[in-house]
Length: 104
Length: 170
Image (cartoon, rainbow over all chains, first blue to last red; front, side, top):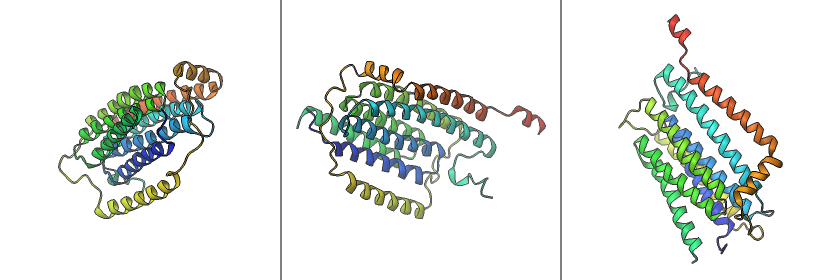
């Protein structure tokens, strides 16, 4: 048992984080950008739980922090989507490169 | 090659495959469904890390609630099907290079990292211990979270509500 080293979990989380970052930077659809941000938060959660088991001081703190992160991420998704709805009603678009009201 | 390793590699492969599919698909609904695979695989990875309660929360919140809320967001907005849903080529190349650079730097940082021996007792009464910790040591953050959720609820309703007075003025 416990033959998987810590670095494998960290590399997996890094790959997922990079996928999420690439999606958030290159996608035009704002819903997909929000989902990519959720993927990045998930990668952070994997790190927290991995350090809770394999860290220098193993304990439940990492798991509890990941629970808090999940809660905040859910709140962020709800508010982000509400902003998107308001924006869509006013501008009839969900493309991030057309959201330039504050730049003009 | 123990069973734990085989399970981990299958789950990791599923998670990464879901993410890559999400990047490459063109239909928005398909993207969200691909992400559900990633979220479920991450729940499995939590189980291999002896965090059963976090895995259950992951399945409930991410593959349940957040996926549904994102699908609602997609259904309530219009999406052009076949037009290029990508940014200009320069943006894609630049952000790809930046992400690759970030990946390489982080990879060399964490590749050989190892901090002592793993904890062996995390899976014993995991949910009970998390509950006791939440209601004793972390009681203030826990209560603040309820305030945060209330604020998010009220804020989301206020933001998404149709502004009837202004529409009547028009």
